[in-house]
Length: 454
Image (cartoon, rainbow, N blue to C red):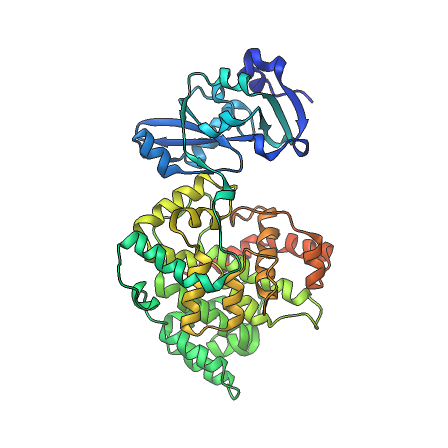
């Protein structure tokens, strides 16, 4: 297959030295990526190894700038001008100033992915160095193997949390978690729902009373039940109608819990560009977890309502991070933008020393949330977790990958091992068909998201 004209022109005299290979035949260690950045001083392109974390803060400090990821609409214009779906790591495509990470110089040869063609151009390092002779060299990327994410040692979470707080706030005295974090107490509505959950004599009327005591929450529940997603027969006129005729006791209880907790902190003003917002992520994951639950064999199936709640609250740590580390949350957002190929746990561990999953699980443990939900949130990035309630994090991990494969931007995605479907008793073909249908019904899902912010 021939290279696009714009790529051949960008290679210039080096074109003869380039070998084309299928991307699967190339070592990931020699792959490069180029990130388009900008600030009020102009545009800059940064090149580093594909799997390395680009430390945007370090780069800005070294260059004396305030760079961040170029707006996506601007990136689209650049790609359109080059006639490419994705820009390969060839600086001459734009002619902008370039900075190359020093780790690239340690390679013997380099590989550059050519857009959606699944091809890689392989060339000797010396040729790439000649092509980028005018570029700056700086040390701004970090190998992911040097960032140790705590995926399976919850006994260390508290220590890591306090270390992170001391690092960024200068606290010298260890305090109780809820005091140190300066978080609001568990909302009254959520407290009442938790008490209702553990009450074996709970009735529908008890739940209706709780929801109706919060007018804003009641309006959201009624709107939810009236949405086209549920296609309720007849008009939904009250919370009682919503619970009894459409949504059911468990769904309303868990939906009310998720809404109460989300409203307690509120959405941060900043966010990583290109990611769907908090409530979109929450609804996609909750619906996905619910779908997977219903498809599991009865003997393996977890409690559907708890899986839904874990999905609804899976990203609660995002809200907590914004409140706990406000000055540094902005840096997290900027880093997530320029490291979209990397899971958020790596970025957060590197910048803060703790991840959103750890901090959310610790807080919810203190709040007395169900163990199943705490476990699902804490281990959702670890599909190999085998402790008690392991089905919940596995469902969250699987649903995230299935959504990401279908273009729902929830962060970096990974390949799904067939053994995971088997461990959950799921039929892979049937699951993929259901998720195709879910994503094709995006308009209805987005309508539901709109109801989360009345």
